[in-house]
Image (cartoon, rainbow, N blue to C red; front, side, top):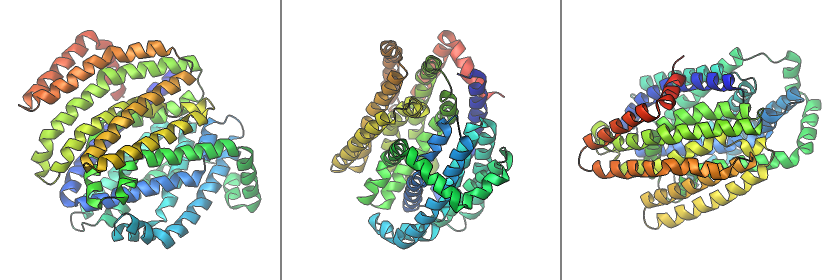
Length: 475
């Protein structure tokens, strides 16, 4: 593994991610006061639907470009042509059928936004393409700065406008203006593509070559695209599936809970995932295993314990900041620790089956995961919405571990040693979680005492690990 590239990329991404998450948290505090549960539900449903459709626009060509070591320009041209063409088709379809989709999700306003805002998929598709180009070139610093500009512009606009005009559609438009700013910045900063290549984007002759490229790699591309779609739907199943069965307001409650608990997790997942995939794609298997084991120890020693304490602190902070408006989200926050905690072992290495040219393994994993998630969401909803989310989180945790082991098996790692690594920390995590949860019923002071005690343990027994994590934040 290119250690210097990885550390430099993670350092830039993590440091700017902390800034972005801090800005986003401040913005979120105000938005959760100004907007209703239904507004949040409409926004989250729209963004989930658009994210799902964005994967369709690439037809797997983004992954082909990332893992390819030959004919890179030809592959990128095919990706760009396909993204623009399919985005145009989807825009037309949303204009025609958007209101029907909105009715399916019990929201006329969502239907209008889908009908009139379908063209936003051009921004999302092109942004994904440019981000893939940046990853391929190892331009992690520019990626981090682009994301930061995105958040700053979007946040400033929201704070300036949404207080006066509290509409879900305005929230959606401002969010994608931020994404557009990120796209423009990357286009300016990244190495310029040859003008001759850009002219071919609208060439019918080169479109035929794109179709021929797709035909030659059809098995890989169709499988990759199927995996993307299954995974996108599966991750957003509480929105995309339950949204057809319950009112948008409950989707807003879920979005509130998931957004709060995902703030610290996103720092790690984003920082490691966008660096790991392009680097692992060009690394030896043995070096990849060493890197993954090292990352796992960081997650188990620091990542998950910090997430547990953070979730417990939110149980006190939510009523203080927002009153009783979001009390329904408080149990969901605790349940989502299970989901997001285990996702830290899954997300950064999610590209390994592609890299190992075994996408069928991930396809099978996604089919099983989606089926189980849909099943438990449906069964859990017969009891309550919160119980459905709890079952979703438990099943997801099991499947995250399954993917983790599957990926390491593809890399021919010593699975027994991996199991020992995990079991070494599992009892500590369980004691920490259950102890804090129990003592937190009496006073917020007790979980804080446990956190301080665990911090002292890290400083004494795991000082090198703690210093390493802190060093990633420093420039």
